[in-house]
Image (cartoon, rainbow, N blue to C red; front, top):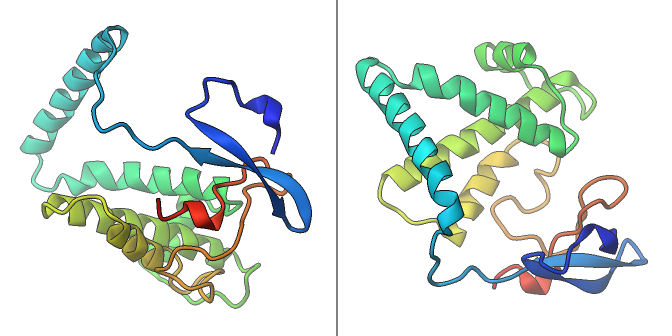
Length: 186
């Protein structure tokens, strides 16, 4: 990972480690603060966001099925986030997969990418349902979402629903190296 890409004000630290047999660095985020005060310069942005959410909430209350508004946004989020992992499918391919799910014949089969993105959407829905039920964000929730995410796709043999036990990196150029295994639980 490029040390120069991190400012001294970054909310964490870089630790040296070995990734794929090569000396590298991983990013370890700082713990979240127990108390946080919203900086005054953010107040106007928060007011704008609250106003926009209120309008959206008002529209949602007039709809018989608010899912009609949310599902396209969730699908777009799933498509974009999955592309960060190198999984590419189109909105049309995803829709066709959701209408008529098929088992991929190989990792290269375009159906495989659609299934990964559909799993992402399902994991997101599980998380929303869990939180709407009054539960807190927890390691249990993260593991359940991870299990849904990897169901029947590449990586499904890598202990779905468990925190990783080895080092990984994001991007073929190791653009981002997440925390080492011993830093995951904290």
